Image (tube, helix red, strand yellow):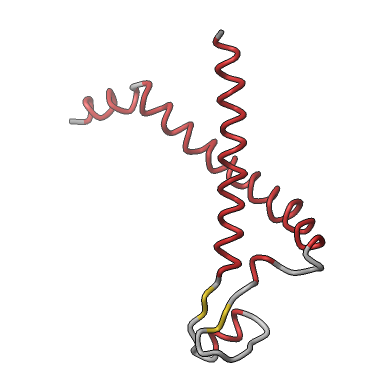
Amino acid sequence: MIEEFKKFIAQGNVLDLAIGVIIGGAFGKIVNSLVNDILMPVIGLILNGVNVAGQFIALNGESYTSIEEAKKAGTGVLAYGNFLQNSIDFMIIAFVLFMIMRQANKLKK
């Protein structure tokens, strides 16, 4: 069984997958930094200083200054700002991957 496991691990597909996962994790950190440190502050400036990720609706109808405050009060929150933030992250990742694949396809020709 040990020999079979060594053979499995040594296959190119397993190593390629492992490398892809590691590079994907590092790429995710870069994209998160791009979104959180560069793009979202600019979007917030355009929206008059509004923090997009911090936008929410308290489901009890009362007003709270932050999501954390509403949660401490035991209120359910609809954190639509967090959803918008994650959607923007996804679109940026998808666009960058599209550009990478586009360049890779050009190099194959």
